[in-house]
Image 1 (cartoon, rainbow, N blue to C red):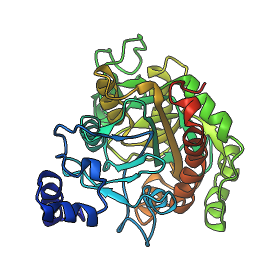
Image 2 (image 1 turned 30 degrees about the vertical axis):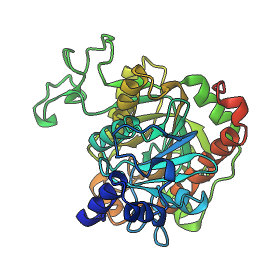
Image 3 (image 1 turned 180 degrees about the horizontal axis):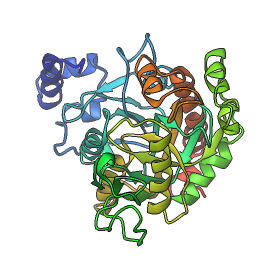
Length: 370
């Protein structure tokens, strides 16, 4: 969005040319010398080694110095000063040569997350074969399970878009929802079926390891999110200060909201996980990201067993008692009550894992923790 056409042209020229002037431009742009002569996506004899990829989905305004979205804290606090042009994606990449940490902003939605992840995975400027991946994004959070500001590690990623749908005003009397899995005979048909993009499972042992490592991390709290959660008098977990938990992720391109939709989300995740997963967070990207990583894993570009998914609640997925879904949704459109708490939680919890893996790379390079 804020990356102009002229910037993209400069970036492409910078990476493709071999003149002394171009080399000087590459140095001034802080592009590592070993890939300055490599075109994005083209052959590259000396790829940059990557130990960790932090995947964020959006940023607000500038990359630093203003209201933080998902990416900004990682850039500012992790010394990600090396900017690498990425014209085949949504946002330029940032890299730390010392720690070999790479950060990407994919853009919002499964289409952008899938295409940006695939573009990165196929970019021969990077050696991602042993990289760990940390998806770190904000989300809606089920008040039955947690409060805003809480951070949930997911293993099951369920897609909320691939489905049949009938307008609720036209559904049969015995249907609870007008939305049901493809190939079934309505929402009351619970016949198990193999997912065809409707559900992905990350490394359960790695998820559990990450949770155990971070479960006692103190998360930020403030009067604004304390006031927001105080209204959820029927949901004890929603009234707790932010905490770390395990819980699954539902990815859908529609920003849905309300008690009835929340009930559907729990039913949907329960069905696709065969009762093994509990819906906790709602966002828009995970199944796109993981679909791309699954394909990339097949050709050895990445290792999907090294992927972790962390989502922090910036808002609740349903209103408190006494408030309509419409009123609550429109209020959220003016700004999520837990935005700043959630991005801080993502950084604090995610950094614990990043520090452990990068700080003990000799142990984790060839052995995935469990």
